[in-house]
Structure formats: C-alpha cells, structure tokens
Image: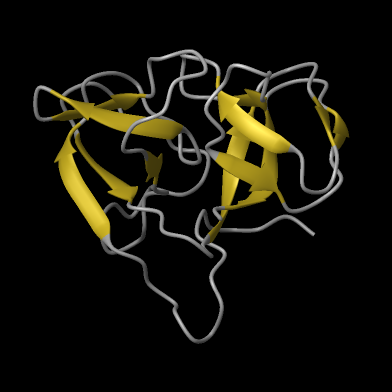
Length: 144
C-alpha cells in the first residue's frame, strides 16, 4: 500500500510541528531538508548532522494541485515538518541502497537518505524492509 502523505503519525499525534519559508531550491515531498539563509533547501552535508526537516507534501488547503508528486520550486513558499523522536515519515532514499528493517540512514548531501556509513551521522532508521532501491524510493522511516 502506498501512503498518500509524508507524515505517518499515530492517532495520538496526528500533526507534528511545521516550518514554512521560501524554497531555496527544488524540493520534493519526503526529502531531507535544512534551512539556510531563511530558505528551505535539500540537506546539503553528505553524512552530516544538524537540525533537519522533512519536506511536506502540498495539501489541498495550501495548493489545490498539490500532493506527494508535486515539487516546490525555488522561491515558492515551502512547508516542512520538524521531526521529533518517535515520529514516522515517508522519506526518499537514493538509488542502489540495501534497506532492511531498522537500517540506519544518513544524508547523501542532496536531500536523499542513504545507508549510513561508519563515520556518518544517523538521521533516522528504516521502518520497513525495502530491499535494494532501484531508483529514488519512498521508504517508511522512524526518528529515534
């Protein structure tokens, strides 16, 4: 089953905190993001840590044409979730990643997640066995 939204929270917490700012580059819902010079951009540090965001899908009340497949373009007002421990999201994992349940994931420096290496800062963990990704793949992840 494919999710129709980025945040996959429980019924006890159905809306996490959000941040809104201009997009500083093209953002796809589910991307790992950061804020730079007041703009939301794809997370830019390969294997790096820091305060991260999850690019949110465009909702009907924000843009009637939005959804998971609609990118934000540079200059548009973008929305992003502020993840906290226990949150689950549908996030984008880069091509050719062997993702099993509870695999540690890190930033690829371009807004996607990759399997974390020994020196990488772990951002989140896979919450499903996605196998080896054959393209940019949406994977259910959890923040610990």
